[in-house]
Image (cartoon, rainbow, N blue to C red; front, side):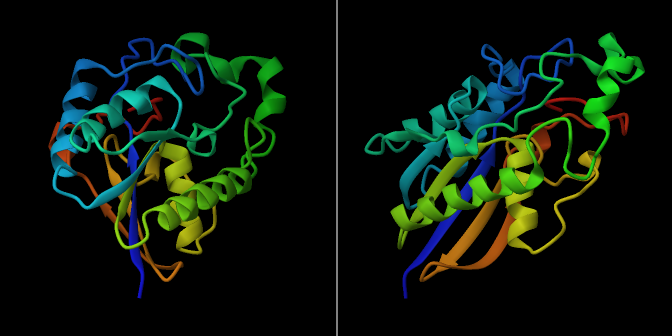
Length: 215
């Protein structure tokens, strides 16, 4: 029986003082706290039986992967566009500063929150993440893989794996900064999902239910 585990990691905290929805924009790297989170992840996976490393091409994801890869120098990090952040119409905007939802020209983009109409569909995100995770499981057959990705794609992969509806409240996602969502496979069949927070004590406590990009 071939057993493999794919650990899908969310990147650490990003330096984003203006609360911009940075999406796929270049130049958003980890904050100092985010770098501490990444080091914690490196320690967490130091003794793991890793045989495959995959990373979103975005800077924050690559910086999160770096301490993990440093402890497994025999492995090459594979960049995979399938685990990139979701496309979003509001990329580059700050919800607080720009008062986005008060501007009539943006209303068309929010006409359908079930798809959602403001960006890549939930179905599309789940499909590409499923494919990337299953490929990682095949490459790591009998061992473990680490995939560094982003909050929404990770949450879509998990809800899909658990046969739950993809429509959800963004404030209730269980994919905090530097968290690990592990997908277990046996002979290519998904057998379980486990969620852990190796850097949970480093994640700032939210003081508001308002959705804040990267928080």
